[in-house]
Image 1 (tube, rainbow, N blue to C red):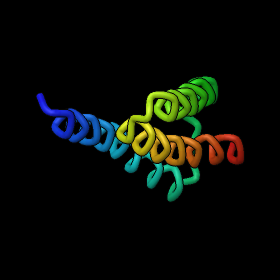
Image 2: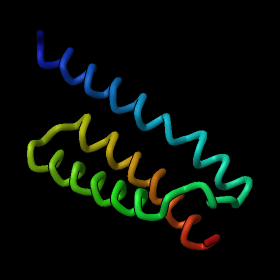
Image 3: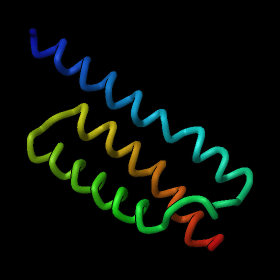
Length: 86
């Protein structure tokens, strides 16, 4: 498979998994309710996503960098709302 096709598959996979957070961010933002969201899980998840982003830079992988940066932002919004509305 050509490198461009591999990059496109990586971008598509990353965009789909990143987009999965958008409904939760919208719902959490609108309702201001985070009672069913685990603080520990989101702290660990955000840390993991941050490390994936660093890894992406280390291996110079655009799909890993871009999608994890966006996922980190979305997950961080939920985490901040969870901490504020505890």
